[in-house]
Length: 640
Image (cartoon, rainbow, N blue to C red; front, side, top):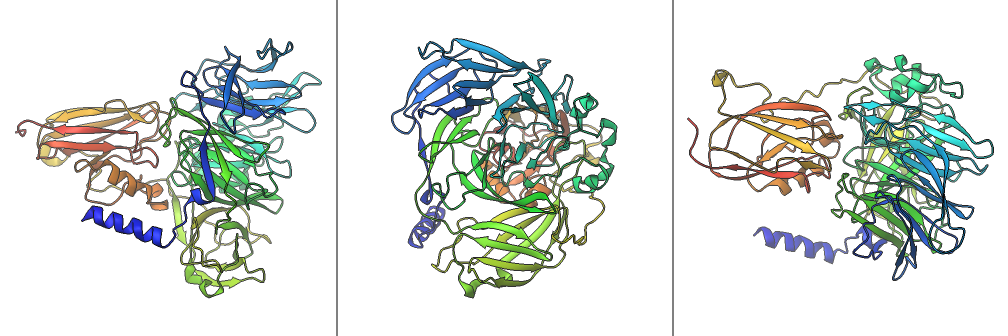
């Protein structure tokens, strides 16, 4: 019966002509020889159309004819995990861990014969001290970003870890540009030339986000402030200025001059888990209807999001929407070719991704069809204007077609943040504007300093198209006209869930004893270190889940071979998932931990199933369950 229902639904979708992302943007594979491990760290197109790619293994490859049957030639090797490459003025510039290096082939034999150190940056050897870039500015200066190290929290033991740095080639001078970054894996400029940096969830970072940075700005992570008193620094804040008492970044920004609010937050697990590259669509419409908007890749969820920005009171804020998922590996780098295809450079070794492959190189092409989508969202004094890519059927425009709620994240030293202070925003009016594409919404409870989830239901285009994606998230840092709304002063920092399925206290009737003790640990690359555990029927189990990884995980024991079912259900929870440790309320969940932060552990107590058999366990953080799983085998006689 179940198979019949699935087939029936599939046939119904086909009959109704359900639209897919691939109908509008097609993913094509770029061939990679079997003997090349193309773990892309950076890439750029050369004027002659070749694609230069550096890999995390320290190689640089030249790819000819990447749009057809690609051929590869090795250009350089021996580099230290390069995570950025830029072609500039006839040379190739690489961001290695400890320096920016200029490569040049002076004798034109296809092999780099010049390895010139442009400038060096200090290292301690911490695995997390990544280095990204460079990006050349119009005046010839270059920009790079440097990760903090990781020791259970972000650390900056040497200058300039956690900073965006500017190098002036004419003066051979390295200048601290902006501070407050944790893992700034990607950065780029919008059409106006303003710099935006991507950030990954972690300590002090509630969720992924992009932030506009000008010189002297502080992006929120305090480790870098150790070097803020350097004579060249224009950052005014110091380490002691930061503490957990502000509760939210919005509150902190009111008291800490120089703290830059994110322009757009990316809700964790919904729109990415490892925000990576930023690329502006400068194709003038040759890549579809979103010219001028930002495309932001995600390494962990193997996909691209789309960002529409606006300025309110002189600062950027805006909306993020789904765009295209389904890439083969972790999407770290993006570049447009001369023929307006988007090339996606991917890697996953040690940084597992939903795509499943260790690495990939793919291109994304617009099919020429325009999807019916939310194009942009703009704030008004009492709500939003939602613009669509196509004219909207007027008969569908009504308040009930829009469901809006807002929420925020905690600004604290802990890793990540649950979704906090969720508030519904009833839509009191919805009016189609004269352009036929824009709907003006008036809301109750409109307040600045929050992220707004905008869901659309039942709205169709005038051509009777359904929306390809029916949701987006707008970051409201300021209300146009200076409105203050109903902003709250604090966020509750505690996740209060304490269900019977998360038994963190030993049951009283165990009399202080248990039958078995089980330890489960995470491993780097979104894996459980132990993928096979055993117990006996009915055993009283003290269970410890320890997380030495550098991202949050949980442990969810299912009622059999139910890992996929529970994982899929968790991925559909949306904001509720982020607020409840991604634990779906379903009988297939037997017992679970909460989200366990890096370098911490949680102990739970439970009675093993009485029926012998195989019980799958998974991490239900979105994107994790497909690779982070194992089995608890219950066998033998029941414990006494």
